[in-house]
Amino acid sequence: MEYPFSETAGESTAANSTDLLSPAVQNATFVVFDPRGREILGDAPSLEHIFSTTPNVIQEAPVYVPELNAIIFSTFSPDVYPQSIIYLNETKPRLETFYADPPVWGVNGGRYRDGKVYWAVAGSGEARGPNNKTVGQAPGIYEVDPITRKSSVLVNNYFGVQFNSPDDLVIDNNGDIYFTDPWYGWAMGYSPTPALHPSTWRFRPSTGAVSVVDNTINQPNGIGMSPDGSMLYVTDGGNDIVNDTISGIVYSSTNTHCLWAFNTNPSPAGKWLTHRRPMWCTESVGHDGFHVAGNGYLVGASGTGVDIISEWGELLLRIQTDFMVNNVQFAGPELDELWLFGMGSISRVRWNLTGMPDARS
Image 1 (spheres, one colour):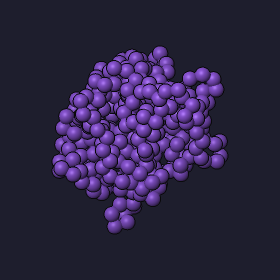
Image 2 (tube, one colour):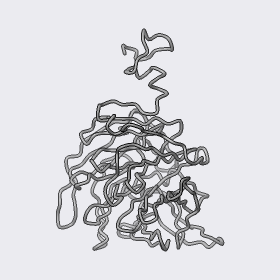
Image 3 (cartoon, one colour):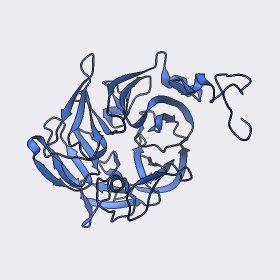
Image 4 (cartoon, helix red, strand yellow):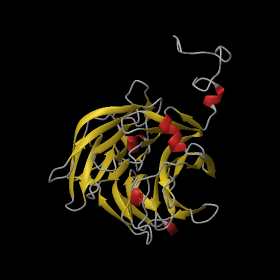
């Protein structure tokens, strides 16, 4: 397209399958940018709307639990305390309420590992459970047994200073937990004024040690790790906090809204990060929910769709939706379904791309 990089309907001499402005492309469910994108889709890809959700309310932290063949997720709203669970064993997925014990609210990210669910929790204050039982909580990393529903806090401070609002987490092959801690929870009314710089942290459950591993990203958000653990990926949503006294979030197109890659380097204290570099810049909103597929491809929720990127930063495929997608999760016995969670809809993609073994994606 020539300068000034815009057209009105009918100006193009020909609408073709490679013209991103053509209605055929704009209305497509799947847009292939590379031959590998066709391999991802397979012979009969589909995007199916499963549940309607409240418009303008975010659905977050989906975690697939193989023992239950179910997905636990969070409605990220200050007045919603329980989580939800989708059972996949039946022909039609079934949605029920999920209460942790003690209750936990403001869950923003999650991962499954060895029979447990791990949550990045932004909410601060009182969580209300059944019968209006309340429990105080601080932002942090929580562990939940999905069978008994018993919950416990693993870490919620750095030498007595409360975390800002943990957003998402990933667990490496040694069991160390890496989590992002932006200011978004405060800006959205979930947590008090931040006391720490937006950072990415490493928590070692084996020792209780907490270490900052990066503090260079504006507002770190989604996080994932390559199947072999040699790469850590962190997203930046491209948002600004209004200022340090007035809460609120403003999207800025001049911010990075990038996916960043780091090399991981083993040490006795855990993996350290080096060689930070941008991998992919989203078209508009930066990736929120982020996962790594079993083959190393990168899958990020990017507003009105999902980007699938190679491990080298090449856009392979885009899923386009008519609702805002906040998060995604591989699910199903073969981990070959991708569930999309967002404002107004929960949907399911069936294709050829699978998550990591043991539901680690």
